[in-house]
Structure formats: C-alpha cells, structure tokens
Image 1 (tube, helix red, strand yellow):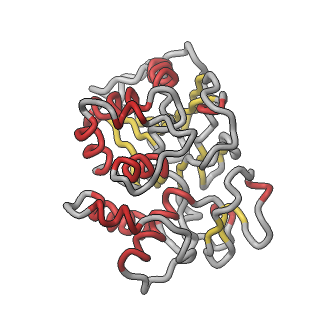
Image 2 (tube, one colour):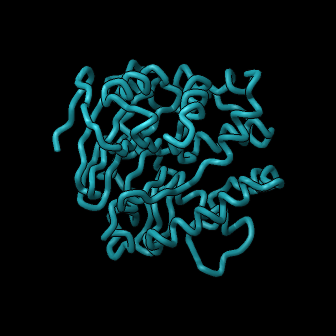
Image 3 (cartoon, one colour):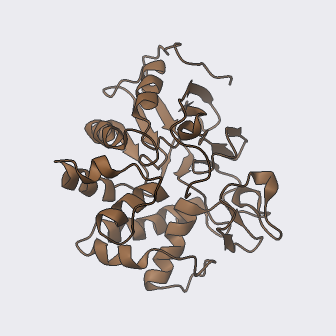
Length: 294
C-alpha cells in the first residue's frame, strides 16, 4: 500500500506491528517517525532491524529510548551494534566515522551494553522473518532462527567477550552444516549482519560495500536473488543496504533508506498477513557523507 508521510498520524485501535530500518544514532528522526505512526508502547509492537547506533549524532539517546520501551520493542543486532560491543571490549579500535563515544562515556554504559548484547539476531513475527542483513540461500527460515539462537546464547553468556575476539573475519565464506566452534558462529554472524552479495552456491562476498543490487561483482548476486533460495516462499525484512533503498517484493522488504546519509527513516506497518503492509517515512538531515566503513 502507499505510505503516509511525516505529519500524518495513524489512528488504529488494534495492536500494530511496526518494522523500522537502520536508525544509526538518528534519534530525532526516530522520534518523529514514532510520532508519525502514533506509536503507543502500551498497545503496539516495534521491531528495529539492527544498527541502532553509530554514524548518527545521538547513538546514546537511541539506546536509551529503545531500552526504555521494554517489551514493546525488539531490537535486532546489526554490524554496527556488534562493533560497539567490540570497541567497548577493546577488541576493535574506533573508526574515524564512529559516533559511539557518548555511549562509552555514559554513566549507564554498562547497563546499556549489557542490554545490547542480549538482543536477538533474528525474529519471526506475523509470518515475517526479520534479520539485519540477509539469509544464506541454503537456510530455511526455521534454520536461520535456530542458528541465530546459537550466537545469541554465546553473546548472552558469561564468556561472551571471548567470542568477540574470534568474531571478525571473512572466512569461512560459505556455510557447511559440519562447521563447528568459532568458525561456525562467524559464518552465522556474517550472514545475518553483513551479507549483501553471494554466489549461487552461497559463497559470501564482502568487498562491494557501496554497490547497489544491479552492480553485483562478477559471479555474485544479491542474496535474495539466488535461484532456489530456501526462504523464497517467506517474507524477509532486512536493513543494512542503503544503496538498495526501499524495496517491496512479495518475498523481501528492504528498509534501510539511508537516514544517516540524508535519506529517510522508514517504517512498515504489518497487518494481519505478511503482505498487508503500509510504508511510512520521515526525511533525515545528513549526518555523514557516504564512503565510511560499512
């Protein structure tokens, strides 16, 4: 359905489910978008599709807002959220474009980071499978949720910081059921939080960070275009890929519309069925110029 823009509140007495793309520290835009859809924490449900923080001007405010919403909001982990956890643990050095210093210096830093590492990597509600980046073609929706759970249990465990030291790297670049240990978890994290392009047999490609779907490197294609993808009969909602912009297909909803780059912050209201959707957008001031680390 065509969307409603800023300044057009929604009147809906029943519980609504809203999915919102990458916020990346743009708390002002998030507040305006929630106002535009007349979001009510006592009535409605919100899912943020990952990358709550970084590059925008108010990452601390976004985390505090999301945490304060309690059970009314679910927040997926994106690559920038994991990067924040890694920087906080001294595993990664901050990038020049990072804007998470306010979180690291906040008096409630420990509570916020502990809350963040307890967020999921994938959810399925009202028939919509939700991830930050993508789903490998070999995985069913149920398998993606189970594999996400493997990583979630590690991140939520007492030794989570050990895995943070093992999480980064592009290898293995392909899923095999026999993968074990850190290599297995790394492939799961890379698929769910970093994936854009992969080959027909599911080999992931991570060099083409700024390319649109039509600019796939030779031998690769957008993960959602792989023939025989096992989630092709599902609706998969994701963010992460601002060059795609808004995409509404029977099988995928792309919701990263480049808020931090001066685009829009987008929400979809999901009705009784996965294809009963309505788009809402608010325009965003440019916080950073494209070309930084993905």
